[in-house]
Length: 301
Picture (tube, rainbow, N blue to C red):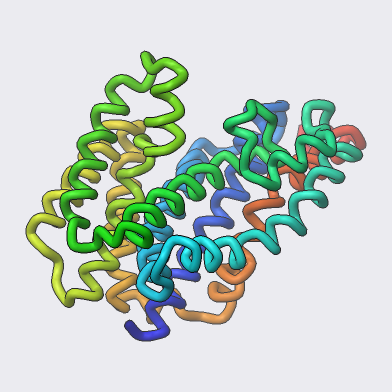
Protein backbone atom coordinates (compact mmCIF):
# COMPACT_ATOMS: atom_id res chain seq x y z
CA UNK A 1 0.00 0.00 0.00
CA UNK A 2 1.27 3.49 -0.78
CA UNK A 3 2.23 5.85 1.98
CA UNK A 4 -0.43 8.36 0.90
CA UNK A 5 -3.16 5.94 1.88
CA UNK A 6 -1.86 5.88 5.42
CA UNK A 7 -1.75 9.66 5.39
CA UNK A 8 -5.38 9.83 4.31
CA UNK A 9 -6.31 7.64 7.27
CA UNK A 10 -4.31 9.92 9.59
CA UNK A 11 -6.21 12.93 8.27
CA UNK A 12 -9.55 11.19 8.81
CA UNK A 13 -8.52 10.36 12.36
CA UNK A 14 -7.63 14.00 12.98
CA UNK A 15 -10.93 15.28 11.57
CA UNK A 16 -12.88 12.80 13.70
CA UNK A 17 -10.93 13.80 16.83
CA UNK A 18 -11.64 17.48 16.19
CA UNK A 19 -15.32 16.68 15.76
CA UNK A 20 -15.37 14.88 19.12
CA UNK A 21 -13.74 17.90 20.76
CA UNK A 22 -16.40 20.20 19.30
CA UNK A 23 -19.16 17.91 20.51
CA UNK A 24 -17.81 17.47 24.04
CA UNK A 25 -17.12 21.16 24.59
CA UNK A 26 -20.44 22.27 23.13
CA UNK A 27 -23.41 19.93 23.47
CA UNK A 28 -21.56 17.58 25.84
CA UNK A 29 -20.82 20.37 28.29
CA UNK A 30 -24.33 21.79 27.94
CA UNK A 31 -25.85 18.38 28.73
CA UNK A 32 -23.71 17.98 31.86
CA UNK A 33 -23.57 21.49 33.29
CA UNK A 34 -25.75 23.82 31.23
CA UNK A 35 -24.66 26.63 28.95
CA UNK A 36 -27.96 27.36 27.30
CA UNK A 37 -27.24 30.99 26.42
CA UNK A 38 -25.08 29.89 23.49
CA UNK A 39 -27.98 28.19 21.65
CA UNK A 40 -25.68 25.48 20.31
CA UNK A 41 -27.05 23.96 17.05
CA UNK A 42 -28.36 20.42 17.28
CA UNK A 43 -26.41 19.16 14.25
CA UNK A 44 -23.27 19.12 16.40
CA UNK A 45 -24.78 15.93 17.88
CA UNK A 46 -23.43 14.17 14.77
CA UNK A 47 -19.90 14.52 16.16
CA UNK A 48 -20.87 12.31 19.11
CA UNK A 49 -20.11 9.30 16.92
CA UNK A 50 -16.47 10.17 16.24
CA UNK A 51 -15.25 7.28 18.45
CA UNK A 52 -17.30 4.86 16.36
CA UNK A 53 -15.34 6.03 13.32
CA UNK A 54 -12.09 5.61 15.28
CA UNK A 55 -13.01 1.95 15.70
CA UNK A 56 -13.38 1.55 11.95
CA UNK A 57 -9.92 3.04 11.51
CA UNK A 58 -8.58 0.77 14.27
CA UNK A 59 -9.90 -2.32 12.52
CA UNK A 60 -7.74 -1.41 9.51
CA UNK A 61 -4.65 -0.22 11.39
CA UNK A 62 -4.55 -3.06 13.92
CA UNK A 63 -4.57 -5.70 11.22
CA UNK A 64 -1.79 -3.81 9.49
CA UNK A 65 0.14 -3.99 12.79
CA UNK A 66 -0.63 -7.69 13.10
CA UNK A 67 0.99 -8.30 9.71
CA UNK A 68 4.10 -6.45 10.87
CA UNK A 69 4.39 -8.10 14.30
CA UNK A 70 3.77 -11.82 14.58
CA UNK A 71 3.08 -13.23 18.03
CA UNK A 72 0.94 -11.87 20.85
CA UNK A 73 3.74 -10.26 22.88
CA UNK A 74 5.37 -8.37 19.96
CA UNK A 75 1.97 -7.16 18.79
CA UNK A 76 0.87 -5.90 22.21
CA UNK A 77 4.28 -4.37 22.82
CA UNK A 78 4.02 -2.44 19.56
CA UNK A 79 0.56 -1.13 20.43
CA UNK A 80 1.40 -0.19 24.00
CA UNK A 81 4.64 1.55 23.03
CA UNK A 82 2.65 3.62 20.58
CA UNK A 83 -0.17 4.51 22.99
CA UNK A 84 1.08 4.56 26.56
CA UNK A 85 3.78 7.29 26.58
CA UNK A 86 1.42 10.03 25.34
CA UNK A 87 -1.40 8.69 27.50
CA UNK A 88 0.71 8.63 30.67
CA UNK A 89 1.83 12.20 30.03
CA UNK A 90 -1.69 13.50 29.38
CA UNK A 91 -3.36 11.50 32.17
CA UNK A 92 -1.86 13.27 35.23
CA UNK A 93 -2.14 16.65 33.52
CA UNK A 94 -5.84 16.05 32.88
CA UNK A 95 -6.32 14.88 36.49
CA UNK A 96 -4.59 17.95 37.94
CA UNK A 97 -6.52 20.36 35.73
CA UNK A 98 -9.83 18.67 36.53
CA UNK A 99 -9.14 18.58 40.28
CA UNK A 100 -7.81 22.13 40.65
CA UNK A 101 -9.80 24.04 38.04
CA UNK A 102 -12.78 21.94 37.04
CA UNK A 103 -16.27 21.40 38.48
CA UNK A 104 -16.49 19.44 41.71
CA UNK A 105 -17.31 16.19 39.94
CA UNK A 106 -14.10 16.42 37.87
CA UNK A 107 -11.84 15.99 40.93
CA UNK A 108 -9.84 12.74 40.95
CA UNK A 109 -7.59 11.00 43.48
CA UNK A 110 -4.12 9.56 42.96
CA UNK A 111 -5.69 6.09 43.08
CA UNK A 112 -8.11 7.08 40.32
CA UNK A 113 -5.18 8.16 38.16
CA UNK A 114 -3.30 4.93 38.84
CA UNK A 115 -6.28 2.76 37.94
CA UNK A 116 -6.97 4.79 34.78
CA UNK A 117 -3.32 4.41 33.84
CA UNK A 118 -3.81 0.63 33.80
CA UNK A 119 -7.13 0.87 31.92
CA UNK A 120 -8.88 -0.91 34.79
CA UNK A 121 -11.47 1.73 35.68
CA UNK A 122 -14.28 -0.17 33.96
CA UNK A 123 -13.50 -3.36 35.87
CA UNK A 124 -12.97 -1.65 39.25
CA UNK A 125 -15.88 0.78 38.90
CA UNK A 126 -13.54 3.78 39.15
CA UNK A 127 -14.44 7.11 37.49
CA UNK A 128 -12.67 8.09 34.27
CA UNK A 129 -10.16 10.89 34.68
CA UNK A 130 -11.46 12.20 31.35
CA UNK A 131 -14.94 11.03 30.33
CA UNK A 132 -13.63 10.29 26.83
CA UNK A 133 -11.62 7.36 28.24
CA UNK A 134 -14.60 5.02 27.90
CA UNK A 135 -13.59 4.48 24.28
CA UNK A 136 -10.02 3.55 25.21
CA UNK A 137 -11.35 0.54 27.12
CA UNK A 138 -13.13 -0.59 23.96
CA UNK A 139 -9.87 -0.22 22.03
CA UNK A 140 -7.93 -2.27 24.56
CA UNK A 141 -10.53 -5.05 24.42
CA UNK A 142 -10.17 -5.11 20.64
CA UNK A 143 -6.38 -5.30 20.89
CA UNK A 144 -6.68 -8.29 23.22
CA UNK A 145 -9.19 -10.04 20.97
CA UNK A 146 -7.09 -9.48 17.86
CA UNK A 147 -3.89 -10.34 19.67
CA UNK A 148 -5.18 -13.64 21.03
CA UNK A 149 -7.05 -14.85 17.94
CA UNK A 150 -4.75 -13.58 15.19
CA UNK A 151 -1.31 -12.98 16.70
CA UNK A 152 -1.29 -15.94 19.12
CA UNK A 153 -3.52 -18.60 17.50
CA UNK A 154 -2.84 -17.34 13.95
CA UNK A 155 -6.44 -17.71 12.77
CA UNK A 156 -6.03 -15.43 9.74
CA UNK A 157 -7.22 -18.23 7.50
CA UNK A 158 -10.46 -18.31 9.53
CA UNK A 159 -10.99 -14.56 9.41
CA UNK A 160 -14.29 -14.63 7.52
CA UNK A 161 -15.71 -17.19 9.96
CA UNK A 162 -14.46 -15.20 12.96
CA UNK A 163 -16.00 -11.98 11.68
CA UNK A 164 -19.28 -13.73 10.86
CA UNK A 165 -19.52 -15.23 14.35
CA UNK A 166 -18.61 -11.87 15.90
CA UNK A 167 -21.32 -10.13 13.89
CA UNK A 168 -23.98 -12.69 14.91
CA UNK A 169 -22.93 -12.49 18.57
CA UNK A 170 -23.05 -8.71 18.34
CA UNK A 171 -26.57 -8.78 16.95
CA UNK A 172 -27.73 -11.08 19.75
CA UNK A 173 -25.83 -9.06 22.34
CA UNK A 174 -27.50 -5.83 21.25
CA UNK A 175 -30.90 -7.52 21.40
CA UNK A 176 -30.36 -8.55 25.01
CA UNK A 177 -28.18 -5.59 26.06
CA UNK A 178 -30.43 -4.39 28.88
CA UNK A 179 -31.13 -7.82 30.38
CA UNK A 180 -27.54 -9.06 30.89
CA UNK A 181 -26.31 -10.01 34.35
CA UNK A 182 -22.83 -9.02 35.53
CA UNK A 183 -21.22 -12.08 33.95
CA UNK A 184 -22.89 -11.29 30.64
CA UNK A 185 -21.74 -7.70 30.85
CA UNK A 186 -18.12 -8.76 31.37
CA UNK A 187 -18.19 -11.29 28.52
CA UNK A 188 -20.34 -9.52 25.95
CA UNK A 189 -19.98 -5.83 26.73
CA UNK A 190 -16.38 -5.64 27.90
CA UNK A 191 -14.58 -8.59 26.26
CA UNK A 192 -16.50 -9.16 23.03
CA UNK A 193 -17.49 -5.45 22.77
CA UNK A 194 -20.66 -6.47 20.97
CA UNK A 195 -22.05 -2.94 20.55
CA UNK A 196 -18.98 -1.78 18.61
CA UNK A 197 -18.00 -4.85 16.58
CA UNK A 198 -19.99 -3.46 13.63
CA UNK A 199 -17.46 -0.61 13.37
CA UNK A 200 -14.28 -2.65 13.75
CA UNK A 201 -15.39 -5.27 11.20
CA UNK A 202 -15.54 -2.92 8.16
CA UNK A 203 -12.02 -1.66 8.89
CA UNK A 204 -10.73 -5.24 9.07
CA UNK A 205 -12.49 -6.17 5.84
CA UNK A 206 -11.14 -3.11 4.03
CA UNK A 207 -7.61 -3.99 5.08
CA UNK A 208 -7.98 -7.53 3.79
CA UNK A 209 -9.48 -6.25 0.55
CA UNK A 210 -6.51 -3.92 -0.02
CA UNK A 211 -4.08 -6.75 0.67
CA UNK A 212 -5.96 -9.24 -1.52
CA UNK A 213 -6.64 -6.77 -4.31
CA UNK A 214 -10.38 -7.40 -4.28
CA UNK A 215 -13.39 -7.39 -1.98
CA UNK A 216 -14.71 -10.90 -1.41
CA UNK A 217 -18.41 -11.59 -1.83
CA UNK A 218 -18.65 -13.00 1.70
CA UNK A 219 -17.14 -9.78 3.02
CA UNK A 220 -19.66 -7.72 1.07
CA UNK A 221 -22.44 -9.55 2.92
CA UNK A 222 -20.71 -8.81 6.23
CA UNK A 223 -20.48 -5.13 5.30
CA UNK A 224 -24.19 -5.06 4.51
CA UNK A 225 -24.90 -6.70 7.87
CA UNK A 226 -22.78 -4.12 9.66
CA UNK A 227 -24.53 -1.30 7.82
CA UNK A 228 -27.96 -2.63 8.74
CA UNK A 229 -26.99 -2.91 12.40
CA UNK A 230 -25.57 0.63 12.34
CA UNK A 231 -28.88 1.95 11.05
CA UNK A 232 -30.85 -0.22 13.46
CA UNK A 233 -28.83 0.48 16.60
CA UNK A 234 -28.38 4.26 16.28
CA UNK A 235 -30.88 7.07 15.74
CA UNK A 236 -31.76 6.75 12.06
CA UNK A 237 -29.92 9.82 10.77
CA UNK A 238 -26.72 8.90 12.59
CA UNK A 239 -26.94 5.28 11.49
CA UNK A 240 -26.95 6.42 7.87
CA UNK A 241 -24.16 8.84 8.74
CA UNK A 242 -21.99 5.92 9.89
CA UNK A 243 -22.81 3.99 6.71
CA UNK A 244 -21.73 7.04 4.73
CA UNK A 245 -18.49 7.24 6.69
CA UNK A 246 -17.90 3.57 5.95
CA UNK A 247 -18.06 4.41 2.25
CA UNK A 248 -15.74 7.40 2.75
CA UNK A 249 -13.25 5.22 4.60
CA UNK A 250 -13.29 2.59 1.85
CA UNK A 251 -12.59 5.30 -0.73
CA UNK A 252 -9.78 6.72 1.39
CA UNK A 253 -7.93 3.42 1.85
CA UNK A 254 -8.05 2.93 -1.91
CA UNK A 255 -6.30 6.26 -2.34
CA UNK A 256 -9.27 7.92 -4.02
CA UNK A 257 -9.45 10.78 -1.50
CA UNK A 258 -5.76 11.65 -1.35
CA UNK A 259 -6.46 14.81 -3.36
CA UNK A 260 -8.75 15.96 -0.54
CA UNK A 261 -7.10 14.61 2.60
CA UNK A 262 -3.33 14.58 2.11
CA UNK A 263 -2.52 18.16 3.08
CA UNK A 264 -0.17 19.31 5.82
CA UNK A 265 -2.75 20.92 8.15
CA UNK A 266 -4.89 17.77 8.12
CA UNK A 267 -1.86 15.53 8.56
CA UNK A 268 -0.74 17.67 11.51
CA UNK A 269 -4.21 17.35 13.00
CA UNK A 270 -3.96 13.59 12.59
CA UNK A 271 -0.54 13.58 14.28
CA UNK A 272 -1.87 15.29 17.42
CA UNK A 273 -5.25 13.53 17.41
CA UNK A 274 -4.40 11.00 20.13
CA UNK A 275 -3.04 13.38 22.80
CA UNK A 276 -5.82 15.80 21.88
CA UNK A 277 -8.43 13.10 22.40
CA UNK A 278 -7.12 11.83 25.75
CA UNK A 279 -6.93 15.27 27.38
CA UNK A 280 -9.47 17.54 25.70
CA UNK A 281 -12.68 16.98 27.63
CA UNK A 282 -11.56 17.54 31.19
CA UNK A 283 -9.30 20.47 30.24
CA UNK A 284 -11.97 22.05 28.06
CA UNK A 285 -14.58 21.53 30.76
CA UNK A 286 -12.33 23.27 33.32
CA UNK A 287 -11.82 26.18 30.94
CA UNK A 288 -15.53 26.65 30.28
CA UNK A 289 -16.31 26.20 33.98
CA UNK A 290 -13.97 29.05 34.89
CA UNK A 291 -15.26 31.26 32.08
CA UNK A 292 -18.78 30.75 33.39
CA UNK A 293 -17.63 31.56 36.93
CA UNK A 294 -16.17 34.80 35.53
CA UNK A 295 -19.55 35.78 34.09
CA UNK A 296 -18.94 34.95 30.43
CA UNK A 297 -22.58 33.82 30.13
CA UNK A 298 -23.70 37.44 30.28
CA UNK A 299 -21.70 38.19 27.14
CA UNK A 300 -24.02 35.92 25.15
CA UNK A 301 -27.33 36.71 26.82
